[in-house]
Every structure is written in C-alpha cells, then in structure tokens.
Amino acid sequence: MESLIGKLLIASPAILDPNFRRTVVFVTAHTDDGAVGLILNRPSETTVGEAVPQLESLADRGEPVFVGGPVNPNGVAVLAEFDDPDDAGVWVVDAIGYVALDDALGAGPPSLGRVRVFAGVAGWGEQQLEGELERDDWFIEHGSANDVFTEDPDGLWSSVLRRKGGQYELVARMPYDPSLN
Image (cartoon, rainbow, N blue to C red; front, side):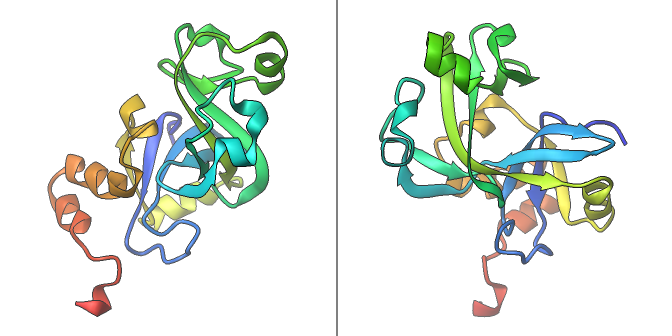
C-alpha cells in the first residue's frame, strides 16, 4: 500500500468506538511498522495556557488543546505550518510538521504560521490500519493545511465528506445517532 502520510482518514459510520467515532485523522507517519496520526476534530475544554503554559511562546494560551488520540494521552505534540519546512523537528507534508519542542523552548521557535497543540496521538501497529481500511472503517481524502488547522473542528467530518462528493455527501448528512430520527 502506498504511504498515507498527509492524507485524512475520515471515520465511517461503522466506527462506533468513542475514541474514533466521526473523527478526521491527519496521518503524520505511515510505514510497514504501522501508522501515527492526529485527530483534528476533537478540541478539549482545556486551553494551552491551562494545560501547558510553557508552550505559550508557540501557541495562543486561549487556544484549546486538541485530543490527538488515545495513545500517550499525557504526551504533547505540536503541529505547525513552517515558513521554512526544514525547520520542522519532523516534517510531514508541504509546510506542515512537528515542532521540535526542546529546541523551540530552548533557543526559541522557528518562524511559524498556524499552530495546534495535541494531547496524545492515534496509532496503529503493523498492518492494523490496512486491515481497518479493508473493512471500510475509514474513508481516505487528500488533506490540506486548512483541514489541519480548521477553525470549525466540529464541522470538519461533514465538510470533508461533502468535499469527496457522491455517496459521501449522503454519509455527511447522517445524524450522529440515526435511532433518534
């Protein structure tokens, strides 16, 4: 399978796991050993200033910390748009990459555009994601910086599905709990 780095995984209605139901995951690593991504549409009620005030030099203290996934929920990852992608601690795609926190907090951050702070990540072991894709648990779509740093995380799942068009537009209109219809 070709690498999914930089792609979006959109949870199908078949995923009922509360960790991933109606999520949009930005894939940041994908190799034969597994995959890692960040959930883009799960802002927490906790702000950067409350949770990790030491990151205020990187991100607005009033911005929410996003729940990046259930793996290592106490860990922090900072994703940003870099003016120079070579400044990324780990480059992902285009101008997007992870901020090298030790360097940024020590010597000061490189020149950054939009920034988002995540607690935890989404992770898959060897062949796990491929198995989920074969079961049609996820839809794949090209991602953009506007998806990663969306101003409307609550509407991201539906908007990405509508963008895919066709049958996905119908899925985008499904109520969260169809039994309540």
